[in-house]
Image (cartoon, rainbow, N blue to C red; front, side, top):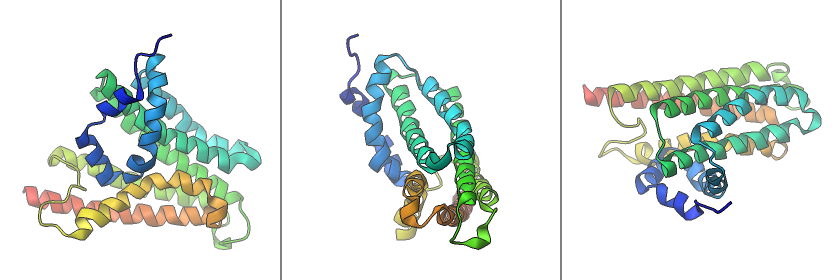
Length: 242
């Protein structure tokens, strides 16, 4: 089989505008996962794997995460973390494929959005299940990990859906700060948004962080802060548009 696509082809499809958008609101992907996706994309392209096929595989993997947490035994947290890292890389890969092959579509965008929601629920539930197995620190959380993980997922999804709905009323992302806004709007709060992709690495290093119960608390704090800022940004944008 002769190679038709190269890493250079994939990089060329990644426009400066797309890079700017990603560094603005998803800097973890731009820093880590996007470069890794450039390496994985050409082989998939050369085997005629479509963007939708990658997304469907990611969706199935998302559904599997809680079951892996339940059934994978002493390797469960490592397996969940590696699957989550693979998911985020593939989330970049499907966009790469769509851009290179010029096959982006509304149905593909919707499938990608749906997959992201399912992944968030599946991963947060998996982290909660694993946290419930831990003993020792944060004893008050005994048996509450799954419930707290799902609560964090709910808060996070509310923020995500708020951003999606706002785009229907006012073009652009709520993280795009208007001219004249200060450091917080232009840099600090978009940086907060980018921390979302840190979760797989936190799960991977859970022992170093002190355990998955601390990861659950981070999830709750992060989701609440991101959702709260989203509501502030939404009302600011809608007020400016009215």
